[in-house]
Image 1 (cartoon, rainbow, N blue to C red):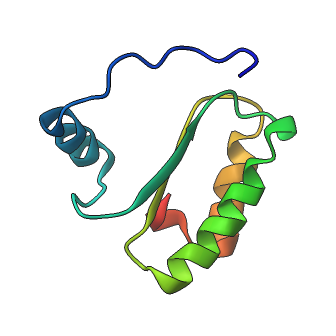
Image 2: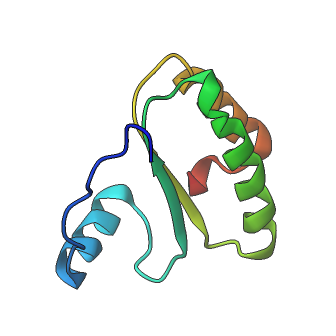
Length: 88
């Protein structure tokens, strides 16, 4: 992956559980996510649109977006418009 990084070792169950608690994600929820610069070129609104479709079928699914950038406010607005703010 261009500009990819080695994520290191897979976290154990205790670390995954702690991360879910910090993020407010239920322990049994399905989670998708991305980490990166919040930039229009990433087209993260497509991820939110897809997530809205997933949540319609699986209400406990969550999406986690980690990063900063010029697209943050647009992504927050898109999540609100799509009705998935509580799941993002």
